[in-house]
Every structure is written in structure tokens, then in C-alpha cells.
Image (cartoon, rainbow, N blue to C red; front, side, top):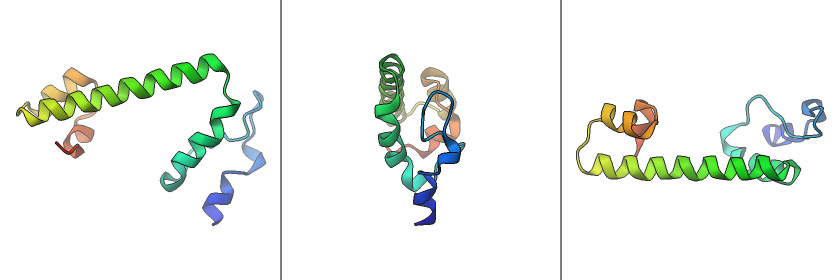
Length: 92
């Protein structure tokens, strides 16, 4: 509960009016933190963030396909821009 309440600490307010600007968000609350930040972002920033998320998902899907066809972790990381350790954790 204490970790969850940390998300609402007003000490993390920024000069741009963002209420939630934590240096680190506990992993179990990452989805909640993202949801809470959404309405406060300006539209251009929000579009850029969505585009980055789509690009990341495309890279992960491509990495899974490469892994499925036997490409090395190094080659997959080079082709997708993902870290080798992240590629190693992907399921096929």
C-alpha cells in the first residue's frame, strides 16, 4: 500500500504541471502510473509516446520471428535495436 501511495506524492510535481514524475516507478504499478500520466501530457507528446510504444512492439514481434527462425541473439539485437539480454528473454 505504501508503494502505491508513493504515486500520489506531491513532492514529485514538476514545473510543467505533471503530478506524477517519479524517478522510478515500482514495476507492479507501471501500468497505473502510465494511465495517470496520460491526461496530463500535451497532445504532441502523447502521439510521440504512442508511436514509440508501437515501434517497440514491432521490434519485439520482429525479434520473436527472427528467434523462431534461428537467428543469433547478436543478429537479432542488431536488426531490431533491442538489447541482447532482452532478446534472450523473449518467448518465441
